[in-house]
Image (tube, helix red, strand yellow):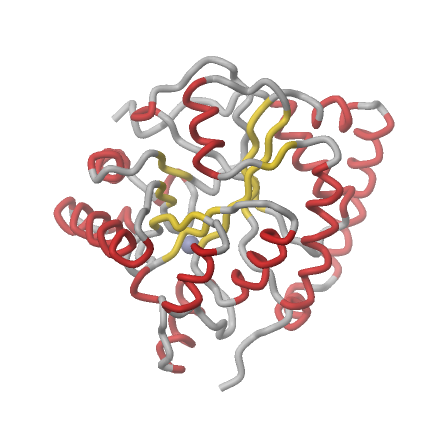
Length: 291
Ligand SMILES: [Zn+2]
C-alpha cells in the first residue's frame, strides 16, 4: 500500500472553483485588515494563542520553518505546559504562541525535528492504539473513517520516544480516536484513564488532554470532568479562539481553544485568522461547566 507523504497528494482532491473563490475572498479580507493596521495591532496584543498544526508532510516543512520565523518576530513561543499555566494564572504579559498537533501521524516527527532545531517545544496528542499500527487495511479504514484521509503512516513507539527526547510533550487524545460523546459513562472514564496511564508508562508523563474531532459537540460535560479527575492539567478543543483574558482561570474550569493552521495557506491568510481571533479577545467560557 502507498501512504501519503506529501500534502500535494491530498490537496489535489479539494481544489476547484469554490476553493479558488474562498482564497480570493480571503486575499481581500486579509488586505483590508492589514491596511487598517488591525493585523499588526491584534498580533501585538498580550495573550496566549494555541496553534494546531495537524500534519507536517515533507512538502510542508519549509512552510513550517517560514511560519515560525515570521511569527517569532512578534511572538514568544512557549511549551504547552507553560502556555496552560499562563492562562490559568493570568500571566499574559506579552504575545505568546504555543504549537500542538493531534493523531500521531508519522510526519509529526519531521515537523518536530524542525521545531526542535528552531528551539520550540510542542505538544503531540496521540492515541496509544494507533501508535505502531502496521496493518495496512486497518490503517486504510481508520484514516478514512476517523480522519477523512487516504492512508497516512502513524508513529511507532521508537518515534514517539524520539518526540519526547526532542523535548516535546506527549498528550492524551483517547485510546483509539472514537467519538467520545457516543461512549457510555463507564467506557468514557475507562478510555481516558487507560490512555493516560499507558502514555505515562511509555514516556513518563501525559499532563494534557485533547478530545477527538475537537468541536464542542464532540465531547460532553461527563467527559470533561473525567479528564480532570484522571489527573490531566488541561483539556483542549479544536474550536478557534484566543486566550486573551488576563484574569486567572481555575484549572478545573479551563477549556483550551486552538487555531487550526494549514501550512500551505499563504502567510497573509494565516496572519488574518490569528489576528481575527486575537481581536475577539477572551476565549469565552466552558460549555461543559453549565451541565
Ligand atoms: Zn484527532
